[in-house]
Length: 426
Image (cartoon, rainbow, N blue to C red; front, side, top):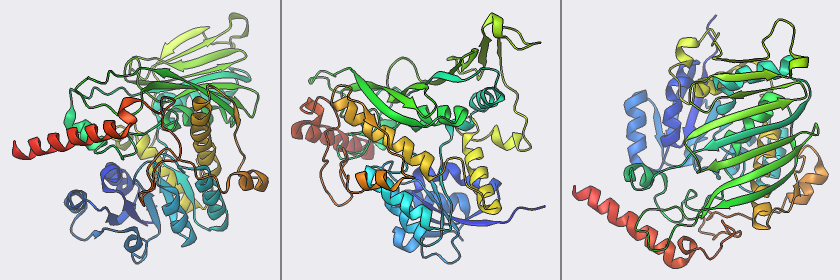
């Protein structure tokens, strides 16, 4: 039986374009794309056809006739206000990266989602990678025993000198969110798989930073903060502990996860193989199982051919399929507004902990009104506002670090301008 078509609009043509094929493969009809950059509008029409509507403002996008759902793929920390407006109109929301940039936005988003008949889902793709799905199956099968400890790392170092086209496209100015991104904020790729695999929710958080300042006289593109990584610890709802990073820049580019129960543990190998290592204590090995083995999970799915072509280890396809299936079946996504805002709270409060040298913070439960009231006016942010409001929190423990000073920001912007002019003349 053919699945019901869902009419969806895309807000943010750069990252949104990576979802076009996966949305259409799940019988989503992309009816509109919104982006202020004409380049991405032309790309949308080239990929989707001349019939797709192109808008330059969100106001126009949500007025599109018959719009049922929207993918938010705009700037990392600016999703909540647009999600709220869509939910208020009964439009389903798929939000890419982080649900809210401030604690107050998290409160407002939860309240809007609870009032709306529409579905809210975070488009977090890393839990759907093959090895994470296998670890989910193993842990939920019970053979590892009660969860004691888990680790999640997302390591994404970038060489600014080797690929300037890529770097400048990612961070085009000193007021861009990537320039000021605290190391704790991009936590979803490290934390979401652990929450998905185990079902544990963070209840308390602390963080410390690993520094790697760049000399002031180094003539290279460098993003603003001197931290190389944030090491985040959470105490969880089941008594377990997570150790996770945000978007770290140490070691080599990889993402890795380890789940440790009372009886055994499972982890993916750090060699990009998708292999996992499953090990038990010798005296607690399940009957018929080896005490330790390395193997690659087998993808057994009706959409295997499409999954293997999708980005992020197939995760982008799973996200699109799950979102549309939830709409069609009228069920709540696992990565719902409570799941999403819990992760955002870890990111935001871990940064405050890091600024204070590791002071622990309780993670609010936004199901509870008393927790909402506590944070409903907390608008502190390390980012520039869309209206030009300057940051109200330092992005780094080293607030006077040279790249974060007025002179350092001007120097970065001048480097970008010079690079762009050179590219135009080439």
